[in-house]
Length: 310
Image 1 (spheres, rainbow, N blue to C red):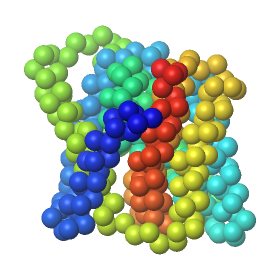
Image 2 (tube, helix red, strand yellow):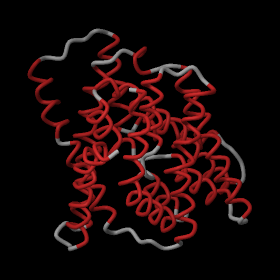
Image 3 (tube, rainbow, N blue to C red):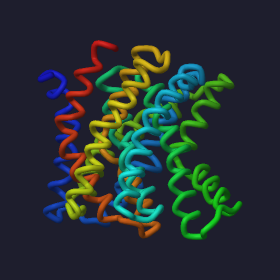
Image 4 (tube, one colour):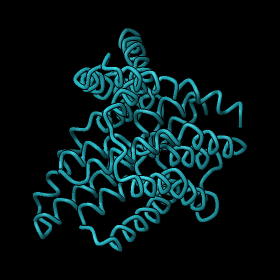
């Protein structure tokens, strides 16, 4: 456990460095926004493309893997939604809370950290988790919020969802990489070196950006944020573990990576969606802040637990 904690500490140290830079004003909110754009559109996309271009679809996509992950997510998603409904809040707010309960920071934290800690073989399962989160749950929250406001489902909602997916640089990078891999298109050495250098900026840049963005987040509505953090850090990996290890025939290594990915703190893109739609952004902000702080220990515990599976 101590060894795993020491291995994860540098990653969270970069987050703490970014947090301190943002908190002191050395790194302004505008600077954080531009750093996030650089990581999101360039560095992380290059890293994801490189990973997927060196993998085959069979190494990434597995029906049992998807089924297990969706089952674990679905159980916690429904539980968070039921608790929200018991509190008599609207569908839009319930959808945002459920999103907090199951969507971890796989892109900015999971991809860089888990591949380093678990080896390059973890890239395929991590990319699969990221793809499911982006395609299934990012679409679901858009459909629920838009549908609840319009009072009905319309084709315009699905057009919005479709455009959102094809404009997401992470989806585009993974898809292009798999296309290059599937068609056996060689990547020139110069282009490969360029992508490697650019992708290397993703890990420090993403972690620093996470910390700097946390500096502007508040810890209001602690009771709800605490509940959502508990869902994300404890119930989500537990449900995914039950599905991957008991209910579905998922290979042990892939199951371990999936469980570790499920243990990650609430993703920053949930806040972006909440702010975009004007639905409980402060609640999401507090959930991200609390879950990220607690995850310094909880993620190490989960990784230590699944290490024998690797």
